[in-house]
Image (cartoon, rainbow, N blue to C red; front, side):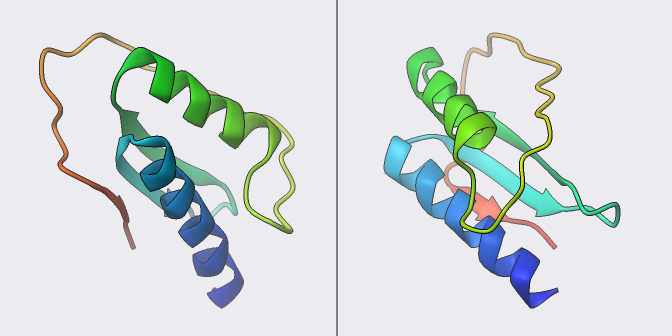
Length: 83
């Protein structure tokens, strides 16, 4: 479990660096789920990082982004790790 927590901490750091808000969480299936909100260009940057770079020692087999929509205001004030 510690390795997974460390890896999603990299995701949290990257999200804060890019300037998006939302959350990320490891699943029991060994995958990661979450929600990202922010300006379209910043969300695109985060999606690119999640798809191509990811955390050190992570293996990205595929990414699936769903439920994409335009929102009138952010639902989160920061980016966090959920447990």
